Amino acid sequence: MPDHSAPPTRRSRTAPCRVLLLGGTGEAADLARLIPGRFGDDVVLTTSLAGRTKPPMHIPGDVRIGGFGGVEGLTAYLRDHAVDLVLDATHPFADQVSAHARLACEATAVDRVMLVRPMWRRDPLDRWIEVADLAGAAAIVGKVGRRVWLTIGISEIGAFADVADVWFLVRSIHAPSNPLPLKLHEIVIGRGPFGLLEEQRILQEHAIDVLVCKASGGAATEAKLSAARERGLPVVMLRRPPPPPGPRVASVDSALDWLAGQLAGGGPHRQEEVAG
Ligand code: NAP
Image (cartoon, rainbow, N blue to C red; front, side, top):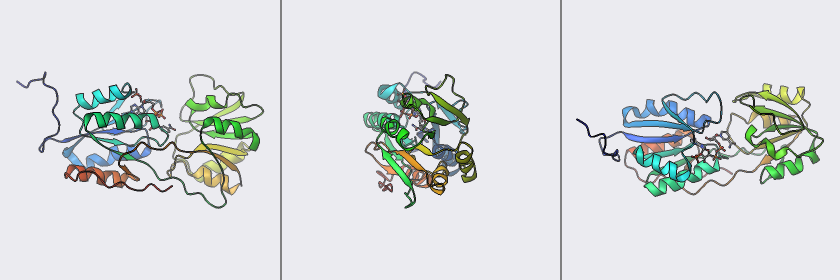
């Protein structure tokens, strides 16, 4: 009879590698799809989602949903599930979970890599106004426009609650469960990736005169910037929080290579430069 009371042990040479993939992004969904094909039984993969979007993003394979309960909860999860490696493919603005992953991995001596997408490249015709945070965006938006398209995520809309004399268009993955704390607004439902035609149509139909977005990077949400550039519109761009220290890769392919290096016993992976 197997001894179920014994705690799971860390990976031995023959055991599969247990990988926790922190997700919530298109890149994480790609990794969840590609890892089984590339590594087969050598990897046991679990993808973790915060559970903010309903229905959740479709992810193949084993998925767990919901917070871990801070650094302590994540540390316990890594120990209890004998996790060998953590792939942090969360959104560049999801700085809390990435900070927790760093500390939990340090506490458990689990190797971790962050997939940090490259920044968008600024075109000479772009009219970006960079701000440090949402408060900065809220302070400036009424000075540059009257019809504002907010593409920052519905949970953070409250930062604009006191902005007067401005109409907001809000794009959300799902209909909000509570009324938005905005004086004048309309909601459009949509889940990326978004194409240029779609973004041009939104700007035109709603007579948008300023866009507010996060410097998320990535192709899935880049078309709105091209559409704004074409119309000569200002874009209030929230700067990214700096990622926590630790090894980074900039693409799904590089994350797969990092994993291959770890499985081969390659030790610490080279840190890639993420274009700024
Ligand atoms: P956050 O501020 O960094 O994290 C807040 C808390 O949510 C974390 O402390 C953690 O709870 C939980 N959490 C976040 N990501 C998780 C994951 N993948 N699995 C399990 N728990 C997770 O994150 P956020 O900005 O709210 O983003 C939430 C999720 O949406 C992330 O997975 C992110 O990749 C995705 N996302 C975020 C943005 C954005 O603009 N922030 C945009 C697109 C997608 P506990 O402390 O209880 O563990």
